[in-house]
Image (cartoon, rainbow, N blue to C red; front, top):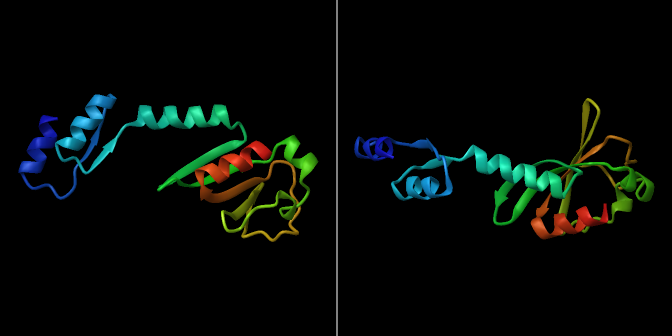
Length: 137
């Protein structure tokens, strides 16, 4: 914390610090740190989301409840949905950005694109809409 204060007083353009607890995080923000990294919290969040949504491989929080998520196809998905169009995505709410298939990426796959085992869907949308889709899959 002292280093953060000294860096601010010395006119540092940008200050990056690592927090060790929630309280430490808030104090560093209050002291003027531009970027506070809290890896334990970030990792915990990722583990919790992965446990809750086991098909989720990764996610990026864009802010304002908008996320990009990578979902792995599940046996349930493959049994009930054979093509991208079968997913019934509301394109006003969710965007299928890409489909990862083994070592290649299919950008903006069409509704007629077949879903295969071990495909990963890259979607963007509001958190609630993504969760609704997750329940369906």
